[in-house]
Image (cartoon, rainbow, N blue to C red):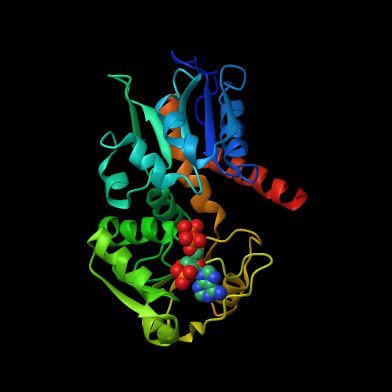
Length: 293
Ligand code: ATR
């Protein structure tokens, strides 16, 4: 944090929320309220949770301002419905993903707009956690919403050749067709082929999450110095990341994506871009919270 004087609140409603169903598990309030406090804005603004059923989602998103909110995050299962509610007032990333995770007011017109910061969060975290990483081929396990955002960022922003491995191959094929990216699709049984020579492996499946079966893959086919990312963060060190570290590979945990995806939203709502120190402080708060849970 470079500026030590408290920032002045901007005009407009003072609240932001995360919308989901259920939403009690969301750690976004902890991240944003940590940053508000660090910038002397903890009294001026509040970041809360809002549990919204599917049939009320579109109305809620469209009426955020009269409801007293200057913006929102949208989480599972509402990102696609939020996109539909805001369309065509969405940016090109949200348009490609057909999903919105961040809603904000346009500074000039005051209109609500939707964007999607998940892919940015993934790439920014990779760049900061593994600064020496460079590679041309990425293998993504899974084909859900997170895989979409990550595949889009890796193919379009990072210019990598992408391979998608999914248990349900048709879902991976639909992802590639929808995103119009140049990517190869593999079934789960073709795992070794999909990993051979890859510079980056990303797990977006639920395997390895507490209470789920572990993700068991053979990492020896990856390139030397490959990076392995897991978006699962409960536990923080998944069996996959432990195996990656043991094999001398770079291991990138899932909290970083969650933290960095929050940065653009905070800036859009509150006019201040959280820096590395802010992210480190929120990370410490998240780890304490996860350990207490
Ligand atoms: P999100 O949208 O949060 O990224 P999701 O849509 O719930 O997640 O997707 C979860 C991913 O984990 C999917 O790719 C799923 O594979 P299918 O598309 O075949 O369902 C994958 N997954 C979940 N359990 C799995 C298992 N036991 N083995 C392999 N893949 C699994």
